[in-house]
Image 1 (cartoon, helix red, strand yellow):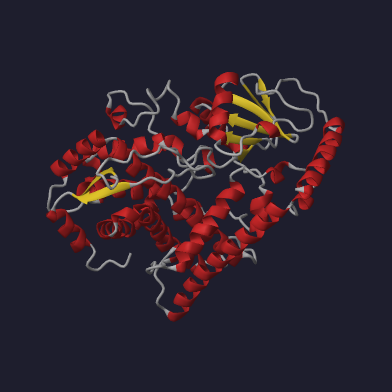
Image 2 (spheres, rainbow, N blue to C red):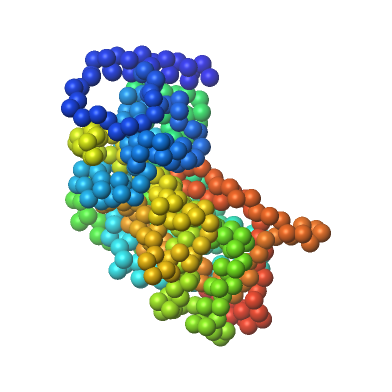
Length: 488
């Protein structure tokens, strides 16, 4: 505790010196925002959890663009789709940088994801992997339905591990445990929750006990999983048994990617980011879908009626069915909107002063899109806290949440097509073979799920229970047939 006080004392002193010696003249005001304390700014106003809710509250009071400051560092929060599109999309040339996260830097997450691995054309080549993983998920639901949250995490993880490394998960695989811990560390490193990114004298602040413990543990998990999987691919390549993957493809092209000496390090980090960015968000979305089905049995019945009509009782859904399943697609859209898996996206940074609606957005400011607020904007989505897929089947539907859920501008998530395909196949296949319902206690009474969400870079539903009952004997047979030769 003493260390933290000392760090904050240094921070306040240096911030005071900085602010008094560097007060630029402005022709335009900053966007409106909550009152600030001298030197500290809004640091004490920042909630420890669910910043998206506080940002949304400020947005309603101060407008779609809210100005904050933390120890002299400007933060711009975009609470409306219009503001996010105007700045991050239409002015992407100056809003496509990322703020430098010192916590992420310390942990080694400094490499960019190579977009070519996840573009819409390449994403189609992953469909067989996703289909096999979802079929394995159905089998696990059949065998141990109460463990559905673990099955969801395994399914999303197995897909990304196969794509990134050609790696097939085994039962009780330590790789999955390590990967989940590394993903959690990654999320905390870039979620914007560490004041160290905005403090002067950052190196000293890293020695605060809790921060030091986080860095050491997080780096350990990330390095172990990164090295384990990378070496797995290299060994498979040397033995001539490699399964083509993102990593193996880049290793084969090594020496032509950037021309620098550190290409192997780039490949390692990029593959690790591919897992961290893809697995957790997909798992959160599928878990939100299951929760929504326990709360909205009428939606489930409509979806199953559509599946029965289009797919029929003698096969499982395929990718070719997607165009004929508009209600299933509407459920996907509503799931993305109802629980925004990445409520604040990943921050951007503006590289030069910019004027927007008469206000100055200063160079170097961190720019955050409040995707949660955008998805719950009642002027766009009527009754935003209700789960209503029908809203997307109207003659004039609201904006597809897919356009917002994965971020804005040139820095939007490149894996959105892969993630969307996984969630769609999970929804269609699960509803075709199972009835999802609320769990019951020992007396047979329904247990009402608690609607709550975790906080951080990725937002999952908090713990809840559900039941999965096969719709028919034929459904059980289809699941078993699909898994006769399934290695996922």
